[in-house]
Image (cartoon, rainbow, N blue to C red; front, side):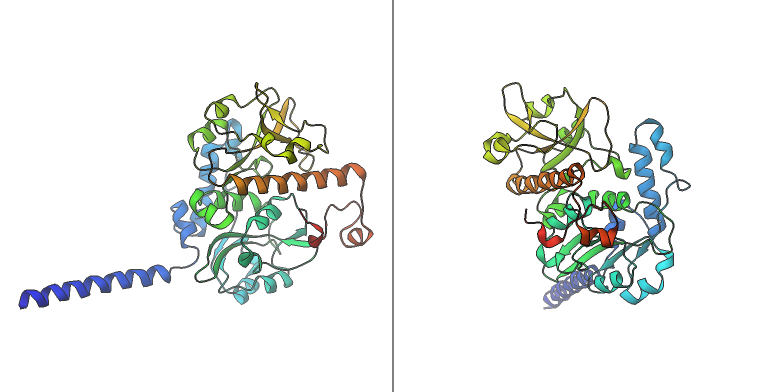
Length: 352
């Protein structure tokens, strides 16, 4: 009998430990997963770990750009709406929970960076991929986008973890590169759980080292859509030999499409397959001699259909911007708000 009671006691004790561990996990601060991704102790350590990563991965002399003296970012970990507004002078990027922060109120108080909505911008593309439940939590404005990025979302609790960018009374400097690096660190599973696909972007204009063909080969299961800057004579043979390049000519949209720019409609393999889609970097102005920007879709991905939907939205957004710049299009109402030659569009007019 004593053995039975002893066994029951041990079983109850084990259950208690499990419940306690689960409770601790549930009550963990919202920013904990971000710190764990980078093995960081706090916000300052997070900044140093990201800089260290950039120094290690930057090509050649560019490693010297990633020092605390030349690039710095102050992270705020957690906080309520009122605390973030009160403390706005002391943080650049806040990692917060939708349960504790009203993003609309932050935006109305001018704490969140705002910019003219432009559908091809990295921020707008990120928002386009988010679930509707998350998009409903973002600040609303017909012409503005607010620099709020979603790191993770739990549909069971309806809690989202947001990265909020602030520059009110703060030193100038791009927040976007830092945010993109944090999002990239989540890994493919968490990224797909939130955005449906895992993208590899050309983020060189944000100071983030670009991905290479060799890296795409090494992580074949970890990407669905990718943007690369390649030599204009390159036909991505290494990726093609692995069967990783989707043939866009299977879809009449890509075959019939007439590009708005001088770049060809497709990148073609030796046997005539359309293995990539070149696009124009007119927005960033980052032209490099004898190179082209091209995006591809992973033919082996189980998420290729969603990646193709994103590809159409991506290229239509870039073509819209290109046409605006080339034709000198203007909207008097928009120019009144943003100034002459402003490039933006009302959100409800984007039907692609």
